[in-house]
Image (cartoon, rainbow, N blue to C red):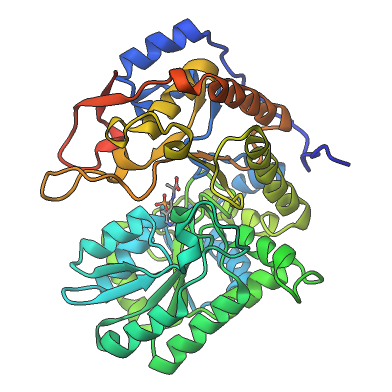
Length: 454
Ligand code: F0G
């Protein structure tokens, strides 16, 4: 059967406030055409991020009641630690309030001037936290991962040849190697088990630990199950266990594949690093058995870790994201292919060739999606990456619009509505005009810049 049946029913609803196109035109003006400045209750379908926007289950809400808020030694911590170790038996488990806090702690320990940390592709906060310690953050994704049109089952794979070369030439500068699963910045593309294993073998050869940025590990596990030979009969949980068996540590944003609204952790095997990490943790996040979290948050993460590897959930998750992307593809809208796990990315530069890159085709498209249908997406292109440290502006490698799907929140009819809206945008695409920036802050301009339609 073709209809995706969401493997849950709805017990508590959050009403959407319907708005008209003319109301949204006013909201856009008031927000200076920056979608981050909208009030989210003026948004109908919010695809800005899949981070912390998921719906918790009845079991997670029930677990909140069990939260023990003791400062030290809370049973909620031990329940969370046990749930994590069931999948990823790292020796030390250090909770943090979200993923970037784990990154900040890890890199403040292992980073430093003259060092290099390679990854398939560093996520923005990972890169920023590495660079803040004057370490070089290198992206070594295989070349297929850089071309939106190339179909490859594991576009997130590490380029093992380049990694070997780097380890040979600069091994003494590398404290650890990272792999981001799935590769968010490259389109939510998975990494194969063979590639994870081979990366670990290279790390072993050069005596380097392998750390996973594992935000979307369950989605990655499901791609392995459906795309890699030898894994069809394994459960996502078994596959996740195998993935983690090749790693020496992980950073995690629980806001993704732990199905909670806030949370994260750093987990690792090295005793010395763990001691240093806990020292920083106490300064910046809290005592080691709560990190920056409440006991109830730890309870919700523990349950989320069990639910996120359920096969029915993952089948729905990956199938429904593909349903959205494939429908746009059928209409002729250029998307990053194959469709990733958590988001569909439109290639706005290819869709709107008449809009000069310096007039931000991605931003123009995202604005139109909101104006016409109340859909909020995120430009990932020249607005986000174009401003150079010397003040000049350069086109980004791609001008994409990301539509990230919150977990267990929207139904197939919400997605059908988005498809219909995008079809209309596509039909009238030649009439779309670009935008210009009329004000921007000195850094991270995409969050607050003011735009004006041309
Ligand atoms: N690593 C990856 C791969 C991520 O996608 C994110 C967050 C982080 C680390 C940082 O985690 O937000 O909990 O501090 N990604 C969100 C997104 C923000 O929209 O893609 P965090």
